[in-house]
Image: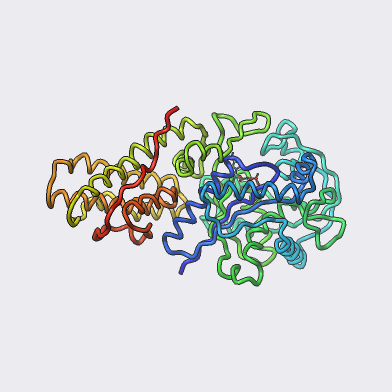
Length: 486
Ligand code: ME8
C-alpha cells in the first residue's frame, strides 16, 4: 500500500486562527482525503508552534504564564479544525515533552557532525516573523517580510553552518525537480542559494520560553529550529515505526513567506543530521481581504468560524479552493462566497442532485441503461491534477462534469420520455451522481456524504468512479445548499 505523509505549518499560538491558517489546513485536508479515497495509508499532520519571543510576549500582555496562555489558544485551533471538518491524524504541540526531546537529539547530531559553533550575533530581529535580518535586507528600516518594526539584537549565540550546504542544496534541487513547488517559485530560492549562504544563529539567550540548548545551559533553541523538527518528532524519529513508515514526507504545504526556512534551512539541517529530506515543499500564495493585507492595525482578520456559521462549512471550504490556484495570491471577499454558493453550489450541484433524485424517486421499475455520460468524465485528468497538488484545476474539472450532467438533462428532456428511454437517462444520471458524491467528498465531505446517503449508498473510492450497474434505491432528503439572500 502506498503511504502518503502531508503536513501543514504548525501555527503560532499568539492569536486566534484566521482565514490564512484555515486555507492551508483545508487545502491539506482536501489532498489528504483524496489520497485516502485512493486507498493510500495517509498521515496528515498539523499542530501548533508554541515557543519563542512572540508567544512569550503575547502571554505576558495577557497576564498569563506561557503554558497557560498557549493551552487556551490551542483549544481555539482544535475547535476550528473540527468546525471545518479537518481530519488530521495527529496534532503536534512543540511544548510536548516528546517533541522537546527530539529537538535536543537533532541538535546533538548536528553538533556531532561539526556543524555548530559558538559566535556572536549582531543584527535585526523581527519578533512577529521570529526571523533574523541583516541591515541590508531591511526595507525602510522594517522587516522585509511582514513590514513590521524590527529590533536590534546583540548577543552571544551558536551558529549552524548553513554555508557548508550550498552545493549540496543546489545539487539536491537539480535532482529533485518537484522539491521546490510550485515551479515558478523555485527560481527565487535557487538564486538566493547560488548567491551564497550565511550561517544561521540557532540559539538565543534572552528568550527563555524555548527548548533548552543541549550544549550550553545559558542558551535556548531558536524557535524556527525547534519548529521545523516537528515534522519528524510527530512521527517519533528516530526509532518509531511511524518514522520508518511515513518519512520522507510527501508534501510540506506552507505559505510562501516561510519558504526559505522549509526549502533551505530545513533540508540543510536534515543533511547534517543524516536524515533524508522531504519530497516536496509546496509554497502557496497569500490572501488579502478586500484588496488589503490582513493586519492588526486594519483589524481585518476574517474569522473562519463566522464564515462557517453564515455560509456552512462546505461552502466556505469550496469557495477558498475554487477562488484561486493554490500557488497564486488571491483576494478574499464575502461577496465571492455568496456568489459561488448561489450560482455554483445551489444552481449547479444542488439543483442537479435535486432534479435527479426527484425523477428517480418517482420512477417505478428497474433502472437500467447504457453508459453515455462517461464520455464527459476525465477521472485520469482529475487524479493527475490532484497528484500535482493542483486542487483548483481538479475542482474545476469536477465541475466540468457536473455542468455536463446538467446539460445532459436539458438535452434529453427526460420529462418527455418513457419506458426504456427514460430508464436509460435516469441510469446515466444516477451513476453520474454517485461518482459526483465521491469526487466532491474531499472538498466538501458533508455534501459528498449527503449525496451518497440520498442515493442510498456509501461514499465510494476513486476506483469506483466508473459507470457500472445501478442497484440502489434513492430517497430524497433535504436540499444540499440553501440560497443565501442578503
Ligand atoms: O509562520 N494567506 O506560523 P503562522 C494565506 N509558526 N495563508 C496564510 C496567510 C494569508 N494571508 N496568513 C497565514 C508560522 N497563512 C510558523 C510556522 S512551521 C515549522 C512554523 C498561513 O501562525 C500560511 O500557511 O504565522 C502561512 O505559512 C502560515 O499560515 C503561517 O502561520
